[in-house]
Image 1 (cartoon, helix red, strand yellow):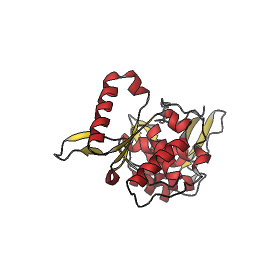
Image 2 (image 1 turned 180 degrees about the vertical axis):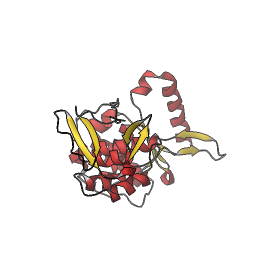
Image 3 (image 1 turned 60 degrees about the vertical axis):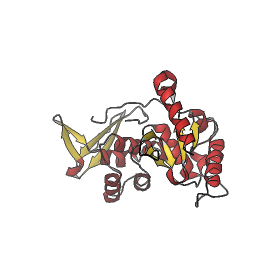
Image 4 (image 1 turned 135 degrees about the vertical axis):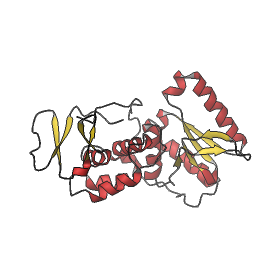
Length: 247
């Protein structure tokens, strides 16, 4: 999963067993037998419990990236994450887990798509829909937009490193964007720099498009709270760091 590597190994033990107190290991405890399952004979913490436990160690951005990825891979659902967080006993990070679970969405293909959606939300802009298919007037598939406002016909397409290395994907995406524009869609193409170096400019572009298309819930003044989590010129890694969560 795309989880930032904190250099620690996280281990969950059944209560009332004492949590391990060893350098390099973070101990968790659970009294809920349903929070553990067997995978190839190994006891593994369920994804929903992992999400809740990691809320004490991850930021809002990173926890939402994890939640989106868990749902995208089919290992859990948004509803299951909400139920697990709501039923969890009091623990550090629990309020963050409960709030973040409600922001999780299906069909999110990359961490940068999650960051874009959260940036828009924190600025007070309406939440775009991720991963919906777009069809023409004859019902033929045209594109699957990364993020979109379907009623206003506004699509946001993220061009990552994959578009630079795979020419066929880049060509297909260029063609799809042109077809969408022919159908009357506004297509906003963004790259990592729009999130890391120019987040305010991206917000203005989306705000203007929403106002031009008469979206009913667009603020005239953006909420400045986005600046705390998305300061300009901050670097993000597009490549997810894979860690073994079954230890």
